[in-house]
Image 1: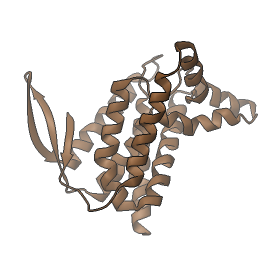
Image 2: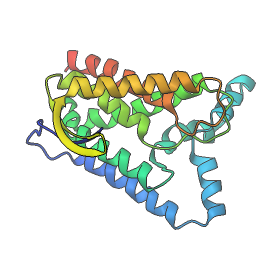
Image 3: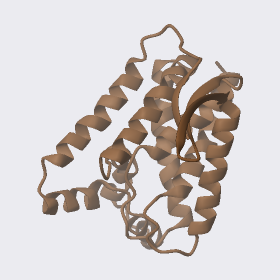
Image 4: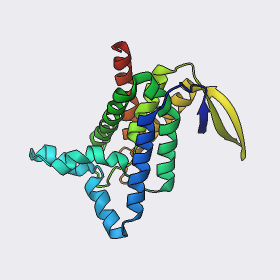
Length: 221
């Protein structure tokens, strides 16, 4: 299922969402300018490597680079499809969530969800040496927030049916519910498997963080 648009379009200028989209694209362009060796080193340094953070906790020795990677990894991507998917979801759902939370709180919310998503992946796969990169965890938080802010929204979705693509409008809660179940099942299936390549538990953690944090912010707004 590919979401195309929703029926929620608040009359605001979502400049934080636009800035985050531009930041992700800008960092990816910077990646393209690096040699393969430089890119490998860059991802190793700024990607979130669970084993490195786990070692820091185990040894009780502060590693500033490892801590910073919880943030910096949110802006790295592994390819065009990875980037386009995250940026599209960020734009489509972030626009409305920024309206729901307000510009400043939305930025803090986005970063907090991304960091919590990384910590969730760390908790479920603490010995992995594969760098976790991408905005997926933070974007998952936006999806969780969207479910709370706009439970009655509708989403126009491109749906393949027997090799024929059709556009249907489905309730946002159904779309987000199916999305979350898929992430949860994939995460459960990845347990004990080395090198799955996708940080499923970051998606799960980010989504739940978005639901809980957004409900807290709404109640006190």
